[in-house]
Image (cartoon, rainbow, N blue to C red; front, side, top):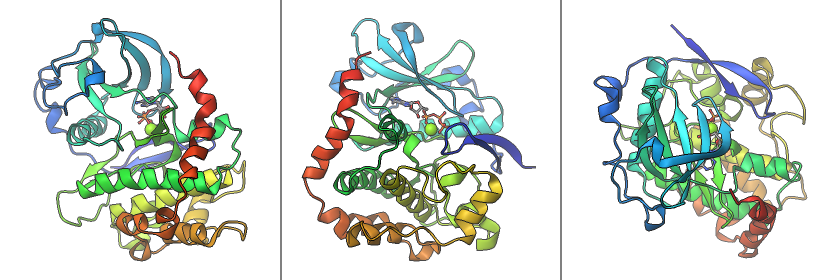
Length: 347
Ligand code: ATP
Ligand code: MG
């Protein structure tokens, strides 16, 4: 039986019900939940974290403010009482077997990742309600989605975009080389800090691929950023290559920053299910106007191939001229774009 839940759509206030077809329970929750959620097996926290890797308690932290609310739970900015270090604390509500499975996957993936391109987890803390909270590296610039909104959706210049695309590609390259598929790449899941770093976050629907190229069948993620074969798997043989699907979402994300609006629909159009189905599966992907460079146009078209086998891999895209010929000034431009955030970054 399909179970429904809501995913957020790109215009912020619109939602769409999506079915989830994964129903198995999590090994993390098969025994005593509290005793399993300790911090000991996580990657070591960097020196700046102020922890020695031992267990943390909620009472060690003071809530500063809410950073965001998503389907997975609420994310708070917190401060460690003794060290004064700032973190993000993501509370995960595990109501039901599907959520429990997602939570355990998110934890497992964060345990396995150790890269500057992926948001770091410093601990998993049991909460009084019997749920858990992730103690995450605090990213003081918010997300690419909030950055675009803060600049009133003014498009990013191309050279800054090459720097953005490069950083996301490095993150995806790390994940894919560790057989992790993200499955929810979108501006709202890409965190930035005021140093100009972009890190991949939110592994709530991600998956570790146990087979070399095991196809996926599950319907998870944010529908607007899904590739055609994910949005409508039945028309594509029921299974999809999740690595290629991440590349589509990356292309759409970069294009959104270029256009200033969700690329598959005119600005302001309500992205209901039928509209998205037409836009993603029936129409051709948008082509960039002449004003965009040939390299950029080609890069986007390599990502947004409707047929997944024609889409370039992350490794190929890292070698694409749009990325390899990127100008160092692009990073400065990106820093300039985020500079208004620097003054607002204090807790
Ligand atoms: P959704 O279901 O909407 O994708 P979610 O419940 O899975 O969201 P996240 O995407 O992980 O949760 O986080 C929700 C929001 O909280 C983010 O969009 C971001 O604004 C903020 N956030 C999350 N993690 C951090 C962090 N490490 N540093 C700063 N802000 C964060
Ligand atoms: Mg999210």
